Image 1 (cartoon, rainbow, N blue to C red):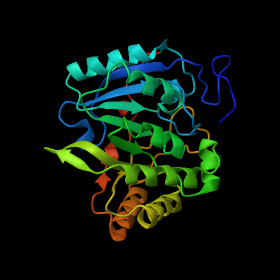
Image 2 (image 1 turned 120 degrees about the horizontal axis):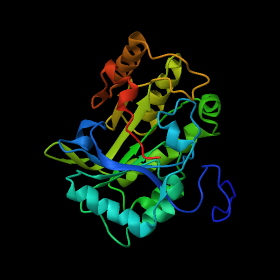
Image 3 (image 1 turned 45 degrees about the vertical axis):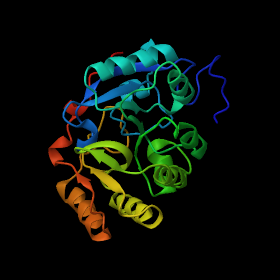
Length: 274
């Protein structure tokens, strides 16, 4: 929608025509039913459709350099990750490469569930295109405030865009687990931001009203100010995180995942190949 021909120049996502992958490996730091016992087969893509002040992966989202992959080469990554024991194939920030990802499934369809790990800033049309291929939806719901979405991520209309996309994901999926490992469904992630508790309360209110408290939410405490941050310069206080957790509990979110506060550490950011 930025109107750029990415065969000729880079788009707002900072990307050209071919997908850039900066890491494809087993990853153990997703929610327990996604990481499981063997890890999630996670593919970290370069570039991003957002521009978050607090991006933990800023080294690849803001400087998408590395090896380019054709759709056929992407399909070979799925095979390798499966052979290594991955519970699923997990696409991280792949929205700008949706066409190539769909094309890759013509060469090989994973035998394990496919995870779409996204900022939540998705067009409904994109979700509809992916429904044939995606089993597990893992979107962020970052903001309930339009103003905050513009301030911290440089994008307009985030709350309504995310709400529409995630509501559609809910309609298209049914939560199913086998021996505690997720096979299909939806988990909504929300990162609690220092100093912005009303934003978190608003996100939970929107989910409760429009999607329902039976949907699993993952309330994340892992905020660590990255080098790129110019606005939020401190860590989350325990009292802030506990306030959001209590709010979720009172709202009736019985399936929430709660993080330990020691997860706020840059060591959880994986080593990228740049």
